[in-house]
Image (cartoon, rainbow, N blue to C red):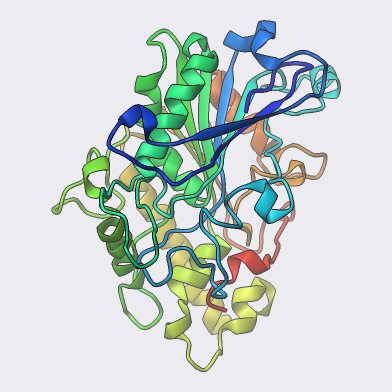
Amino acid sequence: MVVGEGGGDVRLEREEEIGGGDEKAAIALRQRHVEEGGRRPERQPSVALGWLSFVGVGRGDRVKQVCGKDERGNKESSTVQLGREEETGRQAEFVNITYVESGVAKAAGADFYNWNRVKIRYCDGSSFTGDVEKVDPVTNLHYRGARVWRAVMEDLLVQGMSEAENALLSGCSAGGLASILHCDSFRNFLPESAKVKCLSDAGYFINVKDITGTEHIKTFYNDVVTTHGSAKNLAHCSSTTEPGLARVDTQLFILNAAYDTWQIRNILVYGNADPQGTWKACKLDINQCSPAQLEIIQGYRMDFLNALNGLGNLSSRGLFINSCFVHCQSEIQETWFAADSPMLNKTRIATAVADWFYDRRPIIKIDCPYPCDSTCHNNVSPDEVSEA
């Protein structure tokens, strides 16, 4: 979708399964224009000013038996929840990073308010890295997310992104991981003269053992890569590359909670690691953790901070690592840019990202341990609790 100041939205979604060997015919995109200001966004004078591409929330599907279903066994993937609006009966919420209320945002001095914005529906289960030619004969599933990515980028270039002066690729959760994995690719699609950076929100998943000492998450992502044939699209990875150490040359901002709820529930205390359910209350609410459980979670925070070394030279990176119990903080105005949004050193997330993007100052902000941060918006979302 494209939004200019006073303009509207154009939603880009996967309308059909990807088919054929022709790259140009790899995907059918449906554009839905939602008028807000009476003028089509591609005619806006801001077409070259800035472009925000946001990859939506999703999950990784690692085996054929679960791909296409959500955690409760309901039909999901590209068919229902992440598919066409006619089938879901509702429109997906749009990230507020560009401040749709442009008049108010401009008066408040907010950044990005007049940028064009695009939300890419997450629909492939592999952060847009899959590329398997053969269609699954039983489920009719297509593992071709990398082709979806290329088709969307090529379509946006035609719509005006080829003239971009500024561009930011962002995403939350699996979309945040996609922002990391496709950051350099995104840079390469855009003009050399453009300022291009990437923002990963809750997408920096670390490789650690669960509470039983099992390498569950490493096995999980190995299965994702195998099922989707993703290896060929992970540019800097190989069989000898340590997880988390893939190189990203384009400037990258990591926004993450040190006590990320998805990671606590699906990496540290994966369901099978807690058969008696002794961690259930703690996984739902950090305030309900016992002293022994909290000590383990504090250890996870240290593992997460140590894993940030995998980003390489931090001088070109941005970091906003708070001590909140939450998953994703850029999708809603309450956590992104509101009067009571989370802050580090009196800096809100939106301000930190903007100052970093426009090179106003370095942003390397790491919070003190829980429970020191009184600005957190700790929450519990049923969509996050896949194993609790």
